[in-house]
Image (cartoon, rainbow, N blue to C red):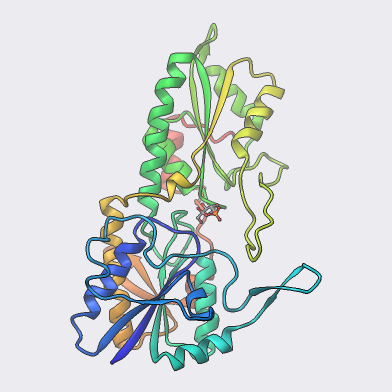
Length: 364
Ligand code: F6P
């Protein structure tokens, strides 16, 4: 029997379970393959005792619409930077990749499918360079990977953010208020831009276009006549004023190396008040609601396509590559290409032109 190990790494994302299920279902058509999952990314392999689970058809039955990941995930540490506590109470990181590869060999693992975002695929490339038969499956709600047209999870996040705008519009209109909705997306404004267009927001602030608070205020005021009116602003967590930096929240979690974004909406509310805004302002931070729960149908379909393709790439020996969606095809691209470029919102793209066309202000 040959064994393929499945790992889910980084932040969770609606559709992860649909990928796992598709891998298992496709593998079950081959008589000589068994699928196993490592619990919490590679931690399951690295821990003593090992934490792995057999992924057979029974284990994945009916999980295609479940959020999260049945094999759990983490965005801390990893085989190349495993956190260890020093005797003085401080933490440092050690490289346990060789040990992990030896352990995988001992467990009879012939191939690995790593479902994860940019950080996880960087780990995939390093493991591939060390001889691991690995295949990547892209995952992110942020849509910030450039080697694929899109990823599963993104449409679900946009849907949730749009529903939030829809809800805030009615309360904003009832109270003559300015509402600022902060959405995720890290350094890319895809979720914000799509939710602003779909939800009919008047202002959309994204990381790719630094805003001028005076321009934002002009647009806000243009929406009020004798203090009657309302405005909905969608702001990406990575949005910044001209000359300003990212809004961040403190983060002292061991092994977590990402900048933790947060606070952009509150900062904008303060900037608007300081600039002379006379209207009542309220902020809402949508946060992890964008990542939880049931994936929309589009994401389930894409996730299923990715899972089937990933296992077929194992059969074809296309190691060191990542599954990618290039409409209308599911293809494979080298991992090196996949991690090469961040997918920012292009300033001249149709989506930005559409937003401007319907009068959405980017505060520029
Ligand atoms: O990359 C997905 C994402 O949800 C980002 O949009 C967000 O900045 C980050 O992860 C939040 O990470 P955490 O779950 O560690 O708070």
